Amino acid sequence: MVKIEPFESYSLKYDAWFDENIFTYKSELQAVKELLPQSKNGVEVGVGSGRFAAPLGIKLGLDPSKELGKIATKRGIKFVEGVAELLPFKDSQFDFVLMVTTICFLDDVEKAFKEVNRVLKSGGCLIIGFIDANSPLGQFYEKHKNESTFYKDATFYSVEEVISIMKKANFKDFSFRQTLFQPKEKLKNIESVKKGFGEGSFVVVKGIKQEKRR
Image (cartoon, rainbow, N blue to C red; front, top):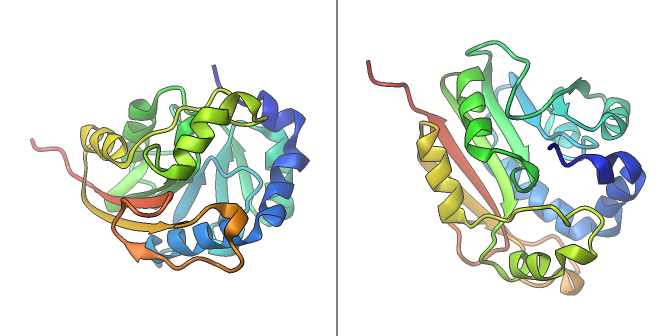
């Protein structure tokens, strides 16, 4: 069952989070930007209210939430209603697919990644931004998720788990960026971005589509 009810009912509250946590948001945005291809032929799956797609110049976004889609549309995004496990796009259509804080809400992550592989061109890439389950912030969210409007039904993944699922879906040649090295209440500026993972709570992984052997 797609977990959209909180986003439908509290779309404005969700969107306001980015302004209320501006340094966290801007830090995450910078980390994603470092691994995003130059190509304009891409889509954000789980576009939400367009807070990442719009500043990153991504014009097409998919999400199951109509209410968030309305906000994304106001930010100049061409919104498509749909789910990651059944993408309404052609085979080999895009140079890249972006997912930011989307995987924790998916019903079937492996199926979604395989769908992404299908719609990517040869050499295309999947970029995933997420809170590392093994990080301090990931552990905090897991411990307190029943108190959260949006994370009650979320499933948090470690970097190793994400990589394992990406490999099953035929992705390779992974690159990593990380940020958010201190608790968000202590943030007074945009955090730095480092290569690798294991220190920052927010991790970005990029994997390249691997062609299936014949």
